[in-house]
Length: 581
Image (cartoon, rainbow, N blue to C red):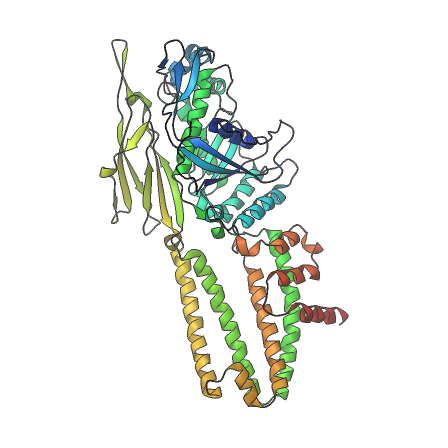
């Protein structure tokens, strides 16, 4: 039976990262199975090897509905306990082990729910056992850089990034280093980061609950261990990363047993919540990503800068000598031309930075989750449980931002009462009221977000000031040019000097010097846009050690710059002359 797809022409693109052997591909395969379609599955690694060695793409369509447990005998939905509220009912007496898949089906709550189109990007493992962290990240950046050049608009953006990590593992130092690098490269995605804590099955939860009670971190079996574990995991993540990151944490049974219905229900509904989380994400253009250079990358580019400087010094020396032999008018013309070329390049670099930051691209700040006391959702009276509807209010303050908005997301378990939501500009506080379904934990999400223009307002102001200063100087030099050469073009001014050959040589040297200086400034950038700074030439030289870099890498860099004239031949000559000297 055909179904409706909410976004047939603009799939939600999700970048899936995580260490090897932590369940990235297994997680993707779970989503593929839930789609009910025949899609090539990713190969899952065992405990000794990683199977994802290259970036992979998986296109799926998944229903936007929660799941229910259906009793085949009674032909009715089973009223199962909510793990967030009635954890003790699930665990006590191993109730969850008694819900056999031979009797119970897992079905969509809403069979007519529309589907959501996803593209999942599987990536090589971080914190790789083969010590290929940077090489693997290069594969990811290369793939994203290629997507940035796609003719299809949706392929040029990423909606969300998820980190898949084994819930039983601590955050290693190597992993922390790599994930911080990812954060620097794509800051617009990390405000909406989701951490998928895998290998979190009910047997595991039961054992951890016993340890918490033993260690007196829970007062009784009626307390909710799962809420305690989630809270502690979030605290550990923030402590390990050392960043102001508060991602949303999801806990997932990676491989629920096929013979047990309730674990399968939990797994599917967890993924349904994750998909709902992605659905609310705003797309980020890949061109907003940065290439944050490592120490080795900076050293490699510094070597290219030094070699370029050799050529600049040689050409500048020739330029000075030629000016001495030229007429005063020719020397003045050349000096004005050189200054205006330098200012033109400076203005262009400022404008490139402004294009990157001074825009309305969404910058997610943080994702918040409603946190309600499970005991408030049930009232016990004479041995009977009466389920109550939870109502609450969430306040979000982002004092570091001049303005921000909040995107609240409702779910099958609760809803935001949007008519009562509001933002107070004076206190920079958003307030939203919500309610849950009777006896259920709402677990509603609210994303605070701003724009690049507000996030980078200080940087933008500085670039605007610099650009205005350059433009003022340019106007002064253009006025002097107009006065001295009566508004003539460069070519006409050359003819008026009376020595076209000298002017031609001066023009050529100015062009070489100022173009090379501009290339030096481009190499000096510590975090250039990825789509411009991670071409084939850059990828090649960054695989080397700084001592292995040669003049060929510099020549390749110049060729990749796609200049409008030939700088390669004079550059080779200047470098050769330097070596001979």
